[in-house]
Image (cartoon, rainbow, N blue to C red):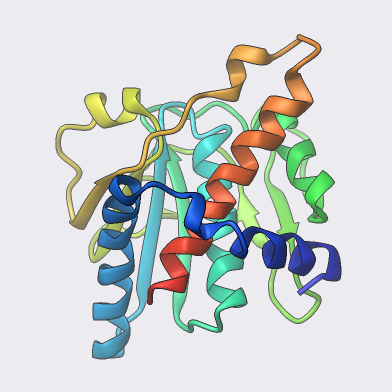
Length: 203
């Protein structure tokens, strides 16, 4: 793992006790799902879902893969999707770059595909905006983690899901084009990183 990201994770794990007991109970539902899959020796598929698949769900996809690597938990595949497709937002990308991710656009389109690298020995995470049931995502045997309230309300039923958990986060989009833009994107990135590390710490 890149040293800057490893150090970022090392600092965050010192703050796991700052998560409320109520929030931990929600997050531990994901931990228990991962543990069950691990005990059965089956692949662990986690799909992070928000409305536009542009910010919070990509943070979830990226940080879950990093947290699995950090805690050396094997057979974890992470994905993201939305109730509609837009694009991986540049402000979310820049927040991840500030943490230490090496992010490269492999095509230049309205909805570009990015390779998000966090470890020289691991394949980069492939990120682009898509609907949650896109063919690139698992269609059965997965956990759906709802990262925004709109997606939670607008996806009353997700076919093929084994576990559905609502871990909603405030949208940093509210601060686009303001002087707080970078601060708020960094805060949301850190919050999702912290809680995802907590999930994997309990596996």
